[in-house]
Length: 69
Image (cartoon, rainbow, N blue to C red; front, top):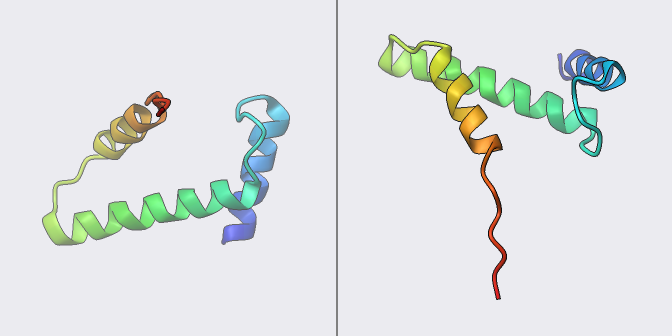
């Protein structure tokens, strides 16, 4: 499963949809973890809409790092 997701990430990168610099395996592991987290939340709490983690991930990706010191 992880290998297929890594290939998908590489295909997105080749198409110019996904930026380089992050190994396909890392992207695959993140995709799997996100899906597993979604399933666990649905099992525990119910009524989890895909828009919630989608928006949350978008917000996290938009964060700017602050320089210290």
